Image 1 (tube, one colour):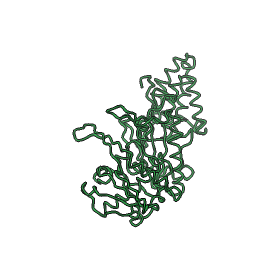
Image 2 (image 1 turned 60 degrees about the vertical axis):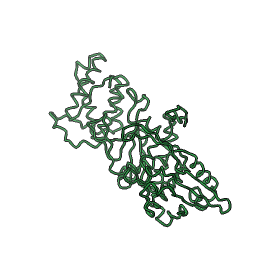
Image 3 (image 1 turned 30 degrees about the horizontal axis):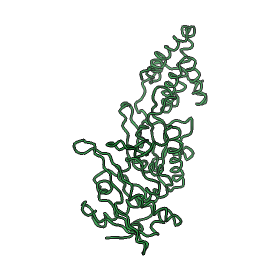
Image 4 (image 1 turned 180 degrees about the vertical axis):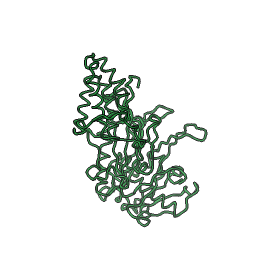
Length: 418
């Protein structure tokens, strides 16, 4: 049974119809061009409709899963002026292998090599094309008992970069009630639609790291954008800008923000170890204020955790903060930074500022509270007349660990061992 591949889509739904895409394929290394992925989106939708029409619930029924195409179908992917380019895209897919890493029932690593398209024919007389889908896709694309993500076909086709396509898949995958669990912060609960990924895993998933055949050691893919800054400029930011633009134009319902979650070593100069991504949707926007529903700017902070609903203990004594609260928040932060630079080393300053900034996101009086406890300590003659070593120990072992408890919070003493 053959039918025009995209007639199925045109007759079976709207241009904004949802379609399912295997999570296993989405987690695979990004080895397809933007045009190849566009074709695969439409092919996935066509397979889904054929599945529903023919009841392809048995693997044997996939042996003759064949679709016909014309130049009109090719132009629906790449445009009327790019039919030859789209033809080359389909031809390349017939030659390009999918690589899948997974563990079998015995927890043994198994590596699969197969194709989306195992046969591609062109009839030179009728100018028709025939595509036969590989039966191996059954376990990955259409087996609905496995995990999958629903994407919007119209949005997916609009995207003009393979990295934007990959990020769009991620945004759809984590846009529901997903809640990331981080074993490194057991006392913190992540907000929904926030997830952390190591830089190493990110590079692998986005096809930026070297890919070798595990048996022969043969280099299959070269490393790309080795510097973190270059990776951000070439991969993350353009994808964020494209998705956000479509979101603002109401042609997409999702976009993302990001930040460095962890660094190697102490302070802000260490190389990035992991990233956090924040997924925003129309139902769950970044902010109800349209002016703030936008990508994070330099100097702004994102906060990944749920606010602490536990009430802080009652203050043992009332400390006046009126003067500090009247200061602009930026000025408060600069004041703290100057105070810490007077007593602490750079790594220590970075550590405490990170903790204080996070607490300020929870409670807008936190900056003024830090200024107050440091001010109270500075007034003490013993502190005022002491050397820098003693003053440093006072801040680390008393001001931040004990004095801040007057306001119901504290900061664990800095340690070079983490």
